[in-house]
Image (cartoon, rainbow, N blue to C red; front, side, top):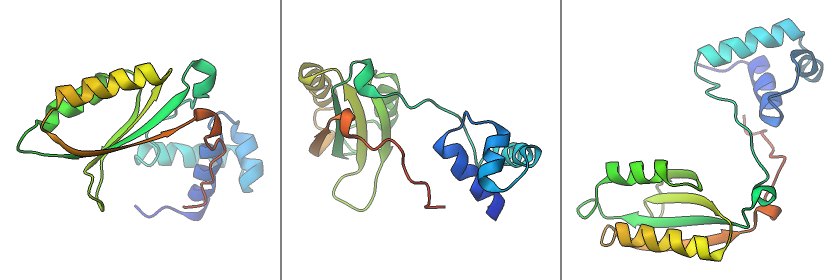
Length: 155
């Protein structure tokens, strides 16, 4: 479904703050409040908008480290279904997905209260999937320095 110009305007406004009133979004986009409501309904019903979520300030709820763990998965040594289940059930996993275009096949982004908890997570992960993880790389960042107001001018 090609997305229309007014739908893009509304989607951008929702990405900035989904709790705004329809009238507020209308003022920003040059549309009426009821018109914004109809566009939102259309975007939800068509599957363009799949969910509304809160984005917490991780550092304010006790997380001091965000890790980006990249690895290459050996399909002959590990079950991807089991990996997916583990990632879904493990606390602290923010995002996980297969990737393409590099030597890595997967990315896992996770949040941890400190280095001890990060080390425990990595040890458990690597032990559980010993042999299936052929290569890995770890990047760390502070959640306090993460970008807050992202620019959604990509669409």
